[in-house]
Image 1 (cartoon, rainbow over the protein chains, first blue to last red):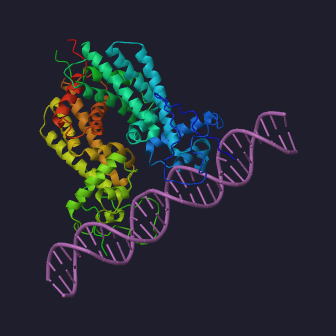
Image 2: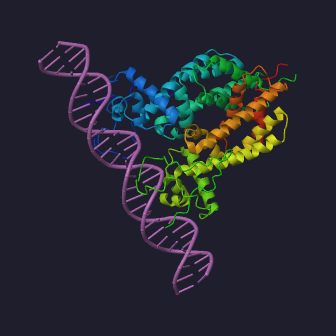
Length: 242
Length: 242
DNA sequence: TAATCTACCAAACACTTGTTAGGGAAGGCC
DNA sequence: GGCCTTCCCTAACAAGTGTTTGGTAGATTA
């Protein structure tokens, strides 16, 4: 009678794999509606529940996921935080997992929008690194919950076909950074005596773990933090002995 | 008839708070045995189940916790990995949570043993930092699962009185690092133009996130990784422009 | 040989989990 | 007015959860 939800807006960033429902989730539940699985009912348009409300609820869910962890978060807790009952969430979303997916895919889409803008500027390697790091801190500022969730859960999710885009994004991420670092070494702006993969992980991790402690409005703007981080990453914390 | 378990060996590192059972866990379950909660039955000695077997099982549990996450890990999965049934675990441990506690407390105890050895040597600030970082990578090498668990779960656990020692350890950790950094600034071996708290988080995070990708026997020894990390942290990845 | 321990199994328990089905109040539109 | 849509509630479900209880095979001790 009333169930127009589904994730019509999960654009599936970086790669538009758009896998069919696949259906795996918790247990073989309700063998009712035995058909209607074969090919997905032609994507029933893309409307019904207002996208604004979805966005609100997703923001709430993201906060709870980030704070308690995905598995420790029950749909009832999310509903509580939203001031409604558990079942009501299923008017907007078709599963707890699809909320997670939409949160992460939205974040990654915007992240890569920012990265692509940087990369298209074709800056030098050092300037590219600076711009990428700064952009990363801006994304942490904007999507701090999503980043925290990504950090904690992505490792367990990559196994599932539904989250294929996480793997894709990660690979593209790695390639982007490695290329930048290698270019820097070739142009003699980055040290060549370092293991480049180690340096990659070093830069990557130092940036993103900041999401675990960063709180917006805490005296430091993202750009300010980025500047300090870059100063440490590029020049180190030791005093120059010249 | 047979239930000699309990966590007699959880020494509760850094601070021996030794809180009583507290009993909170999953729901108010089983109103049977309504008494026997009031004051904990006087710590029934400290023997029975062989400590070796406990250690084996804890190592297995730690691996599963680290890989799947604590909440996503069911006791049945642990039992599976150990080649036994879920209920049998309760001969050795009195709860899933107490396994987690023993894993983390064991790790932290050994970690602080190592740190204390370093700190007692009264090295200069730079040498202290180098030694602490190196020691950290050795601990990651030895307790990689425990470190991974600590990274992922400690944030949710600090709220519980049972895990008070996590907070204690964290505070001591912070004080140790901040002092070392401040000393370094005072002695002009570390840059003084940096936000010291930011530098602290920078160093702390860069070290410990390595546990998420580090795999022992992967070509790099802990000391080797430490050396490279230290090189980046201290001198940066950029080429010196003198 | 009998008594005792150790370490596990088998089966259940009380409860929580994600999810569904049907219904209904509020408001806009004809 | 009647109708439809939007958004939520009530109440339940089936499976999965941590944990307990009682039992027992096999080694160890007496």
